[in-house]
Length: 369
Image (cartoon, rainbow, N blue to C red; front, side, top):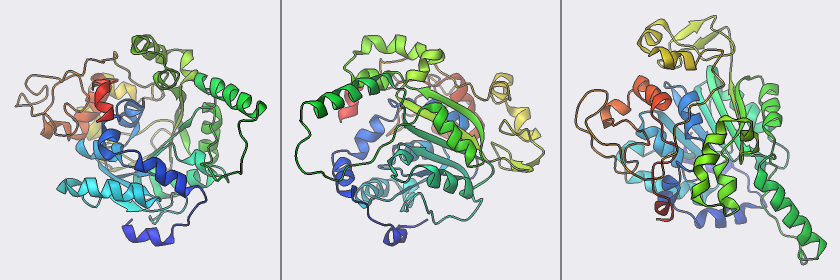
């Protein structure tokens, strides 16, 4: 993918509103909020640690920057040039991130068949008036067998959504929607089961499908931080169905798929779980390997909510060496201290994602920086 692809990207009537939306944000604020949107634990569990991972419709690229900081080969594509150019400008200041962003429409990506190991779509496919299936089918095309796609959309089951629907209905009833119609962003929330059904229909094996993030809809209703702890703990209960996001994770199965860590081809792996080659599995701690078994592949790991903003301190928990704070991501959101060299090792960040992920690791005030 490259920036010249922008020439073939069609405009949409709502592009003006989208451009205004992104001009009201900055890459710095997006990175500061990367830990607040309740999906980092899903990405870190299910994204393969080999090959190339694309965030399709990456906006300002907060997760692309984060995953690259963990040593993953993550790239982003974006159709709207104002957002793309902001991400590219930010990346230009960091040699390791230059060239990570390109222009493309996620419904027709300039990518070879079966060439990617991971695909991320966060808050994108619900905006297509023709429906999300075209983008989901395209994700299936570009992934190789064993590749994993993660889709997230606003949940039609989110508890704040019902209140917003009532407000919109009242506004219509009393005539506050007068005036000429204007083109706006199309958005169609989906219930988790409906999203999962679409992912299955595209040919994916469904690894995870649920509502997540009870904190965000609470925040949107003005519920204060003192309730974040109980809400976060409720993520492990049936109440998660009322979370703000619907998430579905699908794997492209095949007669031969690739090792989740190193990418070596493996034959006859289980259809309902990711695969590890013998060498990588022998190096996995037992509890981490069990988390990827068919019985537990649909479980995600949550840690206790941390709103203190304190950094993990001490010598590296892996090698005993000096820990130097990352200039953008601090301690990378892990409760165990880890150095920059170790955190970029696939097996290390896989273990940390299972054992030591923090739900929130920055003070909330930094989100507005």
